[in-house]
Structure formats: structure tokens, C-alpha cells
Length: 123
Image (cartoon, rainbow, N blue to C red):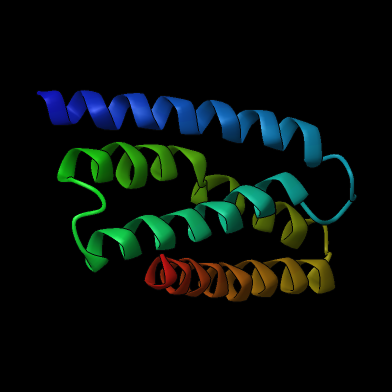
């Protein structure tokens, strides 16, 4: 039961922060959802760092991993909004922006995870 509560609390904080960032940044560009992009890249960096630290040694215990990686990062990042935004770009005929946003989100997200893992090794 304690583990479920940790995931719930972390997810709640992550979701609230994602909402605030999306509200602030999604209106900057017409065809690029900057808020969603930022939370997904930052979430990728954070989960890489968190899981990298957990693999490195005794930096984080199982409860800390649950609240931070599963809870916070799970609530903070958003695949459903990412998919909806892609759909809206496709249905409006914005193939270039669809491709740019999709590729940059995936490539930079993977790079951010690698960067987080690398940073964890340095700590």
C-alpha cells in the first residue's frame, strides 16, 4: 500500500508541473507544442539520471525510485498529449511540422536519457 501511495504522490506532483509548463509554453509556436516537448525531454533526462543513479549504487532506495521515476516522471511526461498533437498536425495537413516535431521529440528524448545516464556515472 505504501508503494502505491508513493507512486500516487509523485505522479500528482509530476502531473501538476506538466500542466503548468504546458500552459506556459504551448502557445509560443503555432505548429510546435513547446510545453509538451519540454516536459518529455526533461522527463527523459530525469529518468535517465534517476535510473542511472540507482544502477550505480546505493544512491536511491526502491521507495525513492518509485516516487521519482515511476510516479513523478510517469506523471510529468505525456505520451497521450504527444500523440494527440501529432494527430492534430496530420489532420491539418502540416506534414513538415508533424515530421519535425515527431523526429525531434524522439531523437532528443533518447539523447536526454543517455545524457542523464552519463551524468549519473559522473556523480
